[in-house]
Length: 483
Image (cartoon, rainbow, N blue to C red; front, side):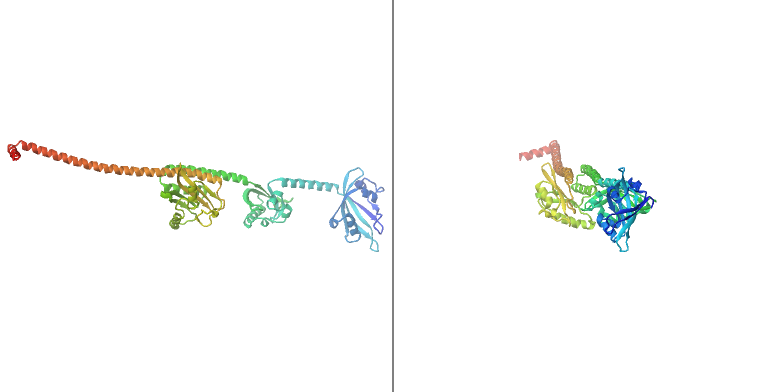
């Protein structure tokens, strides 16, 4: 072995009084001492640390010596850290085999020393770099991992491992299938294999991941091929940046835009519609189109606190079933105080429940309904009606949803009140028109009768005037008067 310094040492039958019978001249470069100065005691004084290797690793120095000299282990291997005569630190590799007497007792050994200081420095520098890299990836909040070509984990950082409730070391050799739901793991595997087979990176891919507690997070994933020194792909390196908060902000913005569109379009529609049913149908349509809210119903108050169903929506309802379902809806809540819709009207307040089934006022409208939002419609001091929205998801409605529907409810209440006033105005106009028509007929009849009377009078006077001018007629009249 290049640079090796051979030696031959012997010791008595008890393994004591170790003596170097031969030591190569290269010991000077390692220790700074000439061959003539070198001995076992000097060596022991120079060595500051010994690291046992191979089969000896894990044993104490004394136990390792015993096992080698007894023949249980055939090879002595270790690394020594020593301080040379000039004070510099050297790392020295030692390997030796035992020499035995005819009686089988160890009498010495033949071996060699080799200065491995440069290699150790390189190893230590590499270890420091690895430690620095490990520290860096572990302090990063992003999920960082390395996989082999079978998509087994070679490395995981703390953020990624802790999200799955395990330590990084525990994940080595495992795969996504050991931690994620089957469908999610299958998607990850397909993306991994595409990168490995094609050699093309996957950049900024948005995907869901599930944490150990079952929560879902949005992650922006980048995966690139991992190559060896010859350029062959031996796996991939991946990093996932959590973008859940950003996605939530984006979703909130989209939701806000939809809400504004809902209020804007409803405002336009309400200014043009004066038929209560058309207004209700428009509200139902906008809630479904803009917010994907279904299981909706709108009722108005009529005489004696009766509630009239104006419009409703039920997902998956066939046209042939509409009439039957509508008849059922009409009988579920018929008066103020009935069901959660009627209760909201009676209490004159919004009711938002994450679980309606525990409420005594709830009326079963559809199988599997869990949460509901019920908003009374009020115009001034007058209760107009109620909008009800239900969901098959628990806690489906937020405080923001409540505020939105309250605003929409205010618009709707004004629209319904305008429709009512318009209808009443039309009714009053029709009644007035009827009365005018009746009075006109009466007046026309009276005018006709008056005209007839005047015509009769004129005819009579004309007749009398003619007769008075005729003598015979005068004489006849005079005789009649005398008689």
